[in-house]
Amino acid sequence: MGRLDGKVAIVTGGGSGFGAGISLAFAGEGCKVLVCDINAAGGEATVKSDPSSLAFHKMDVTSSADWKSAISSAIEKFGRIDILVNNAGTSYINKPTVEVTEEEFQKVFDVNVKGVYLGCNAWVPQAIERGEGGVIINIASVGATRPRPGLVWYNASKGAVWNATKGLAAEYGPHQIRVNSICPLVTGTGLFSAFTGMEDTPENRKKFTSNVPMGRIGEVDDVTAACVFMASSEAKFITGVNLEVDGGRCI
Image (cartoon, rainbow, N blue to C red):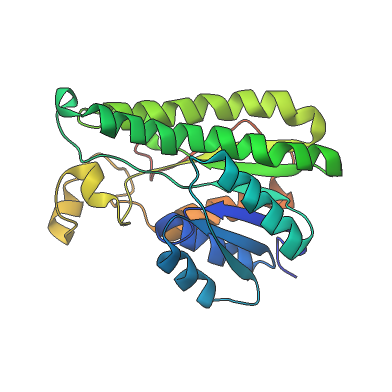
């Protein structure tokens, strides 16, 4: 038996990086997953890895209409939705804060914060109506609590997610809806260069490990394993937690 047998999830940003990894890890544990991404090619590539458990739905997380469509699609295909993973995120390239454009600022908050707001507003009512509880997992960042120069507004957006996670957990706990966030260290995904402002090479990765007790940057499966645990019944009494998956970076 899988740890998520009989469950259904929506995973945003499922076409690459953490989202693809989470979708496949959930499927491997018996979960049906609606893989949502604005990038159709990426989302469809994820689904091809396990077409019996995964289905693709193109969506923009900043669009309330797209969220309504995704909820309807998941219920139509799989009959229910137990888990929401708000993974879709974006950043601008690490640079002096006064050089961040208004457009870059707006995009970061639209995707990273508004996307979570719209997702929760779309998912929560059907979970309450079903009356069986559920799980929301938000992908935040170690930058939510340990911000550093160059990504001030990205980190602030993840700080908003960190705070909202606790508020949502308090508000919807009586409905047996658990809300937690995962706060990863910089990881070898497509956003490495944006976060660091340099090319993703072994040499450059080493520059970001001197203050990590475990001596490396993050890996996608570090995050996917944490998400599987948080979505499973093993975490049935854990809510309002912002779990740092960072090799000790935030100590």
